[in-house]
Image: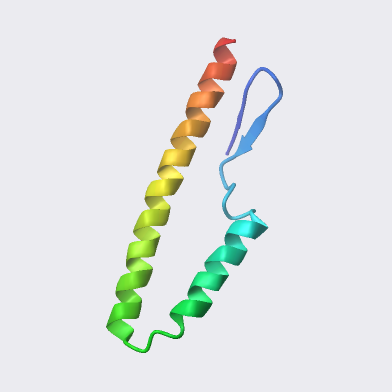
Length: 74
């Protein structure tokens, strides 16, 4: 899904999955996580990271929507 405003700015809904920098950082995280020998701990770390990532994504997309709405009002 794309958001656009009246000054021709578009915001892709899948902005994270297209970011090479983001994907590289996730890969580095997963590579380091491979060094954790305790399977239960590794699982807990992944789950917590995914929860944090989800919350950060929600916050960012909320800001995108706010900026989109502000652009429509200008």
